[in-house]
Image (tube, rainbow, N blue to C red; front, top):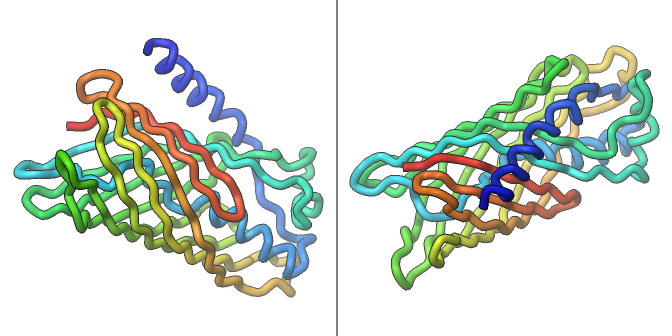
Length: 246
């Protein structure tokens, strides 16, 4: 168990420099390139729940806070990749996003509220996300939990790009001993608007993509959990989360 925790913390430490030099340059993109980039980047920055469907609260409020990292492998063969030379060498072939994630479960009613925050070191790039999750079925000894979640993310600190996402998904989970596996599927709506003074021909893109995800929550100590999740769409995104909850 100590090896698992050490491995997760090591990934978190390595995540910071992996993203630090990333900048965005859309000056050389054609509209088709910009759409392809917006699809990949938008899905990478869409909301990652990294939690089962069961609500946090019951008769009392519930609280969950953790640190996590998402890893997104980019397609170096994509049309936009070679055109987005930042002047400091090739773009990284992966995005690594360190994140703080907090969720609160309301008492009595099975609703969770969440917020996540990413600040990219050595850059002005920031990402804020919000979620509201309603447990249609709260789950129990036999029945699984089923929840519907709406979420929103907004990228800031990038002068040449205004990007945000909205999402709606349904998920199911069932606790088994120390494990709570879960899975879900939903739609993501990406709004990507260029603001480059050079790439004046580029137009705003409104994109809809489907995303599926699977994961599991594992209790490793009282009040401490490890959650891993894979999300699959036009890109693949893998997230690990270490959190406390009560």
